[in-house]
Length: 309
Ligand SMILES: Cc1cc2nc3c(=O)[nH]c(=O)nc-3n(C[C@H](O)[C@H](O)[C@H](O)COP(=O)(O)OP(=O)(O)OC[C@H]3O[C@@H](n4cnc5c(N)ncnc54)[C@H](O)[C@@H]3O)c2cc1C
Image (cartoon, rainbow, N blue to C red):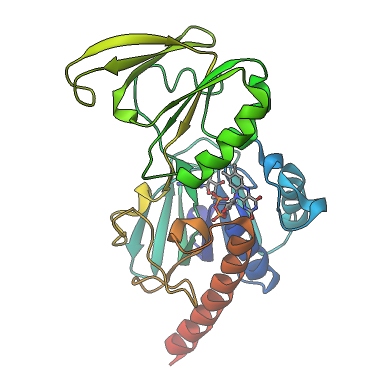
């Protein structure tokens, strides 16, 4: 039953069901704190999670981790899990926050607002896109954002890697070494601004690239035949829905105190990759989610004491 329908607020809303969000929801609910976990899916970024090689424990790799989290959190009395839901905005209210979702999802009350005393943002990051014609429709049809996940699918094929030297460099270097083991030819494009379109019908067939001129201006388009396109432009934080609530840093991360995850807005905490902290990884996100949940529990109990007078 939804918070809105009962009129009873949750104590905590955790947004994002990756490692940081799952760790936080587990800790909060184990302490009897009424928590709603809202996320698109269990287990972090989409793609091929089993490609992660140094996951926390060998028995808890990728999809197994997602399954284990789902089973572990099922039926915990103080926890409501809402998957398939995207948070679209958080509004401040007199007694806390209203967390709004965009509808869809597996809950009877999705599209509703979840009223809560505190919020933990754990929405991670997503690969940056080129935003050119053909990119979106051919996603997963030859367009990939993760070389280490998808390189084996291009065995004996021609591939193009589009990267930005300033962003995503390390991942690209590692990825190129992997691709060389599988692909027939690898063409590297280091100026993403010259790529005009990705072409293909059911699968990628070519990229259209501007030759001569500057960036996308001037020059002439040439077609480069290929079976796959890897877009390697780095990652950006999933913070669009929080722009009105918080001041984000230049790159769009949620600035948070490294010791507690507290943000400048009382009652709003953040953990994991979304904060832009050092060593972004599942291991760190688990720890940060746990620590932020502990800080958040303390905040709630101080707040209750203050209200009792
Ligand atoms: C190819 C690849 C390989 C990796 N390999 C490793 C490895 O070997 N070891 C390791 O430790 N780390 C690895 N990582 C890094 C690790 O996956 C991340 O650091 C970790 O998942 C971050 O956890 P998080 O909880 O902060 O965010 P995420 O795991 O990104 O989870 C955030 C979740 O929030 C959801 N979300 C986003 N916006 C919204 C919204 N508006 N409403 C609701 N939900 C939302 C997302 O769908 C996602 O499920 C790898 C990453 C990639 C891409």
